[in-house]
Amino acid sequence: MECEMMSGYLNITINDQNQVDPIAGAKIIITEYHNRNRVVKVVETNSAGQVNFVELDSNANRFSPSPYKKYDLIVQIPPIPDRYTQPQEYVKSGVQIWESRVTNNQDEFVQIKKFESMPEETRNNEIKLEENSIVEPEVDKIYQNPFNIPDPEPVSPPGVFYMFSPTKVPFVPTELDIYIGTASPYIHDSRVNNKRIIKENYIKYLKIVSAQEFGGIPKLTEEAAIANLLLVNSFALNRVYTEMYRNKGYNFNITNSTIFDQHYPIGGNTFQNVDALVDKYFNQYIRLKGKIQPLLAQYCAGKSGSCKNKGVPQIGLNNRSLKNPDLSHADLLKHFYDQLRIEFEIVTAEVVEGNPKSYPGYPLKLGMKESSINTIQEFLFLIRTKYDQIPTLEVSGEFDNKTFDAVMKFQNLFEKGKKDKGVVDEATWYRMSTIYVEITKAVEPRERYMHAFMY
Image 1 (spheres, one colour):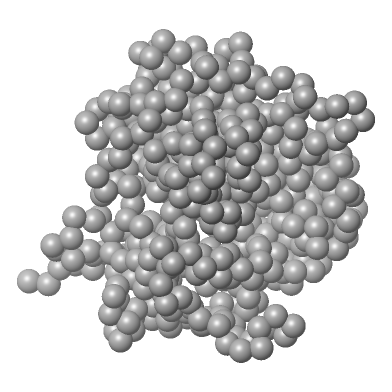
Image 2 (cartoon, rainbow, N blue to C red; image 1 turned 45 degrees about the horizontal axis):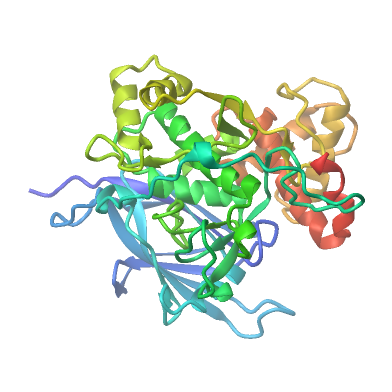
């Protein structure tokens, strides 16, 4: 008797330096895992550097404990004038396809080349992806007492401006400097190799960590996913705001060590459903009542039901949500934090770095006319210079049919999992803003786009 084919989907995006630098015409050969002579499909990126919704079998080998099937991607990049005179190639080994899920694979080739300089992580231009945490043995994380981390004191001398000074309010950064390896935030280790520091877009970091840390939980509810995302985001924002590592003389914000920090697998894939939540909640975090800093929100998978690091069990959050579907993400967190005797609140970051203008506070829709419409039209007008799939429009301040069409096209390119398209909500506003700033960075002095949004 033949097994019924179960399938999942794969979205592929290939950029050169960042998301406003797409590579068109890249060939991706999808093969069986560790059997590259068995080609499954061959696809090619469009002018946006994308291949969307490639359907693949998700039936894992019957001897495999994994709830997903793995594939290898052979990525062949054509010569690019003024950059690469010869074709380039690399391999992503172990891309996971889950039943009825959409896996997103977004690669920046410049970053891939950086990974290839780390022989411990790559070999022969091959990046071997890690298994999802849900199928791996749980690692004991060190307890780090959040009550012992003081809010930073003002330290800037008069007349001196530090872009990342902790005298500012907590903010969402555009990028993170991540050390690939283990280092302690409490003592300086001179053996740290600065060549193992990479830059990562902050939103992409959240998506990769979320997919790895909790995205594989079976029957993951939306409210449990949001609660887990707030834990991940709060932890990372604490590292950024308190500058724990930089204060010890390191040149990075955080590591990818699961002992001290969060599991960031290099080259990691993400899940479309979780990505959509990250886009919506990336500027919200948990903090202790009476504190300014985001909470160093510790957690664990919680396969045994509890956490040795006195954190929140992620599987426990989801189990409680499944049993009590009416509970919100705040209710779920409160249940576990009450047990830990922690009083907390969920707040929205006052500052999103790289955002030239703040979201007006309400969705923008067809038929509206106001100054905020001018802003999104300016965003889209510039974004179109990199993505000609977006139709032309005028900066009129009116949300007309042309603006609606441009918004729809933008969301189809960058927010594929979005449910209510054609409306510019907070998530779409910040996604437009991020891409707008990425383009602006390439053509304008840093001071122009960095000055206003920190205040």
